[in-house]
Length: 225
Image 1 (tube, helix red, strand yellow):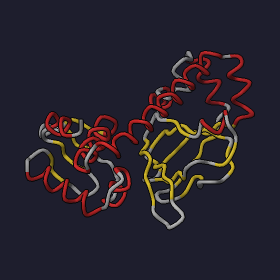
Image 2: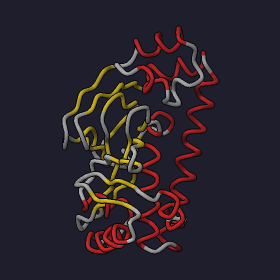
Image 3: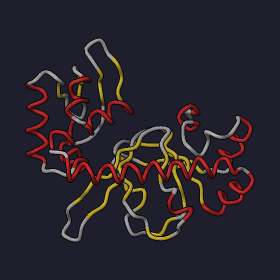
Image 4: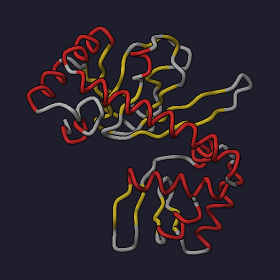
């Protein structure tokens, strides 16, 4: 198990090694294969999850079948914590983008832990606040930013979280199809493909299947502002 990834999660950042080991012992290891649904929008849920390996996506769907991708999450990131404080139907569907391993913790085990470790509760609240801030920012982007700007911003975000520096630039293996990338920025696949082709033509990046090599990070970041 990648303990460094686990300890990056807000649930663990306020704990020392002994307390972290004690908490991990109460969590269940969950393995999920690529394309499998961990939980569905509208289903009851009272567990949070910490990603140890792999990537998952959180998305919602409309009554007519259209899908919106809310976020892509990787090792060290946490999700599902809203259900611990407000039990009820899940607000999104969690699907494995790659094979993944996660740690799961239910409300019944977590709440007593929070009472004994109030600093952890503060970190969880900070995580919820960050999530709300990102949601507000995403709504603002849909209103005020054009599609190329949103695509640039999404690639920069993915690069900062999943990218690896190489001699040629920042290599980002995001594992997303073009349709998923379009869902992430709230646009059609055709419009997103046009933006990517434009960026490639400007030598800001190179496309490589479900990955991208960002060769001019500064200009791409500026386009995403």
